[in-house]
Length: 183
Image (cartoon, rainbow, N blue to C red):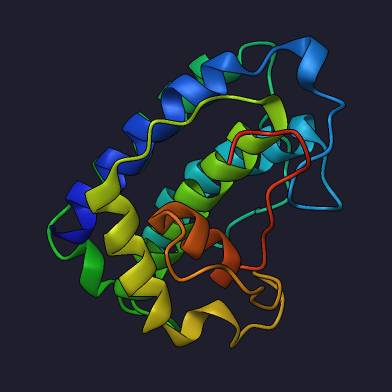
C-alpha cells in the first residue's frame, strides 16, 4: 500500500466515527487524557485541514478552531482539500525543514489514532481496516517522528502481543482503552 492510498483509507475509516459523535457525547473523556470528545473532534479536523497549508510552504495553525455545528461536513471539506494537496506531483518531496514524507506519516498516524480515540470515547464499534492498521503500525515502529518532537505521543504502554493490530498501535502511541468502551 502506498502512503496516499493509506491516507484515503484512514479518512474512510474516520468518516463514520466522526458522524457518530453527537452533542451529547462532546463532554465525554477520551484516551487523549487532556481532551474531551469536542476537543478531539476539533483537533482531528483541524490537523487534516492544515496539511495543505504546510504543503504550500505556509505555517500551519494547528490549534485554531475548526469545529462547527456539523463535524461530518467539516471533515468532508477538510479531507477533500487535504487529498487535493497530497495528490499534487511531488507533494511527498515537498522541500523545507521537514520533507513531505514526514508530514504524510504524521497526517496518517494522527488520523488513524484519533479515529480510534474517538471510537473509544463514544463507544463506537470501530470497523478497522486491518491492512491499514498494519501499515500504520509498521510506519510508527520504524519512525523517529513519534517522539523526536517530544510532544506528539505519550510513552508506549504494554499491550499483549496477540492484541488486535489497532490496539498494539494504540499501545505504541501511549493509549489504553477507556473502561467500558469498545476495545
